[in-house]
Every structure is written in C-alpha cells, then in structure tokens.
Image 1 (cartoon, rainbow, N blue to C red):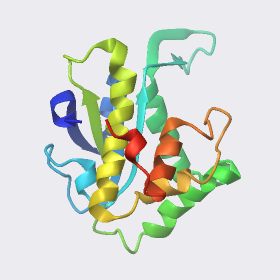
Image 2 (cartoon, one colour; image 1 turned 45 degrees about the vertical axis):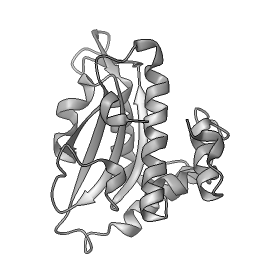
Image 3 (tube, rainbow, N blue to C red; image 1 turned 60 degrees about the vertical axis):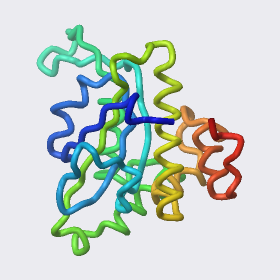
Length: 200
C-alpha cells in the first residue's frame, strides 16, 4: 500500500494534542518518546521508539456537557479520535483505575519510560489522517490497512513489535474489545511469521 498517497501525517506533542484532536474525525496514530519532534515526512514505522500504533474513526455518542448547568447539553459532538486520546492519556496517568487485564500494557509504558530514562525526552503523537480524495465508504478499510501496514513495516525494520501492541495482543480488555478482531489476529500472525494472508 502506498500510504503516502492516501494519508496525511503530522506530529504533535502531548501538550498540544487536545488543540487538534476534536477536529479530527478519523486517524491512525502512533505514540513515541523522543528528544525532538519528528518531521512530517518521518513515518512512525521508521522510528524505533514508537511504542504503540492504533486507529480510531467516526463520531462518539458522548456530548460535551455544560459544567455549570448539568441539565444543559451542548450540541457539539466529541470525535472518537478525541475520546480515544482522552482515554489513553487518562490510563497513562491513572493505572490503578484500569481493568487488571488491560493494565499490563500501561504498566509496561511506565517500566520502560521511567522519569530517569526520559528526562531529556518528550511524548509525541504521530497522526495520520485520510487525504480528501479518498471515498468516505472505504475510510474504515483505509484506516485499518494503514494501521496494519505501519505495524508490519515497523516489525520488518526492527524485528519486533511496538511493545504496547505486543502486550495488547495477549489480553482481552473491556467488553468493546473483540478478542479475535482483525488487528489482534494480524499482530499474532506477525509474531508467528505468517503474513501472507494479510498482504494485498
């Protein structure tokens, strides 16, 4: 897949993330710890310190509430991407509130990126969004293929998986996560070196 022709890429810091996330309806994303922000021509699979690659798309059912008036609901919707980013960041900061089976991958994050080892580095997010010429009907497929291609190319380059993707493949999280989803099967096939059925 030529994802350069189909996807836009840009990088933001963790501090900047919420300035952009609710204006993005659909994206593939990657988390990295680096000493400086990558250029917008540097893809996540090219960076060994990429530790997670995921995807999100569509609109969430969650509304932005009015904190001063609990009975009033604002009309603006939260994008699934914004909701997903808030969920990730909350879990990074509140591990004890995560279901036990899912806690493993977030514990790994804290084990690998201790304050001592990352005092000179920062958390950056690579955001890959579909280019306008892509048909809306195939966006979900495009996101899925881009996510899998990034994981595959990362593994091909570094002979390992991003460590949070690897941890994720070994548990079933909340009831919304399907144990035998396409993404989870794809990661298992990478670990078993059997990728022919996924290549297009």
